[in-house]
Image (cartoon, rainbow, N blue to C red; front, side, top):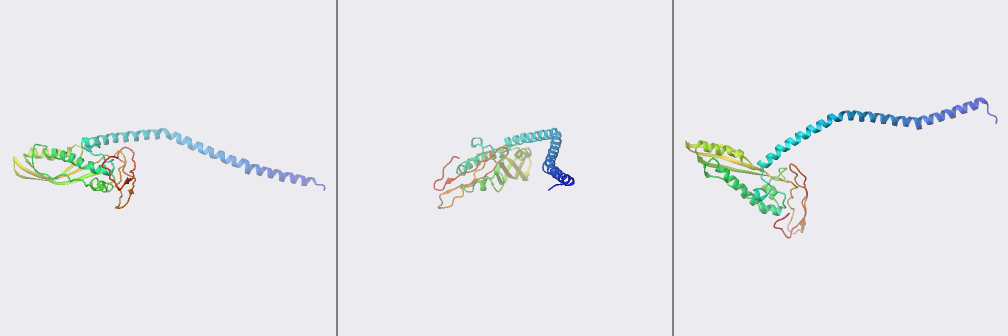
Length: 262
């Protein structure tokens, strides 16, 4: 079969167009699109890089603000919160619940001594004063009943003590009342002040509420969930304070309650 010249020309044109479309759509166009993506990405990177110095300044400023607030908070913690050691009048909230039951009355006694000392500031004579309540002796609810955790998201003692009655001169009574705002390791609030008598022999009555934020450098042990007749229990989770990480509580045996230790 003999092909004419036009047939050969048309066939060549068709083959050429097929090669062109294949090269354009399968090779050139995808690579060109990918190249455009890289160019756009490069442009975005340059724009982000131009913003980097300002971002660094903002981060530096934020860190300075955080550090300044942290220093102020650390000063507050050092002077207006109980320590985390029984030997210095505080309590270690990170102990297991059994040990916390043993330590909490000692902590309460230390707080009572601080309260008693505060009562006599100004050389007043104390006529009557309440006592700080004793903690529960149950490891199952010691955190909830005495340290208000987890009802409040951090351990804290709140003692609404009620009425205090003292006698003395006006200046002595005023010094005594004002001194509560400077009570070491606690936040003390006085309200309802009433003065009776004739100067210089006056009788003052006021109400006192004391709040103590408890330090916790690790996770607080949860109350053990132990039912009568069960053999073991376990728990996890806890509280993370002011400045460092937390940990979980562990399992314990229901048949034997250790006297202390973590």
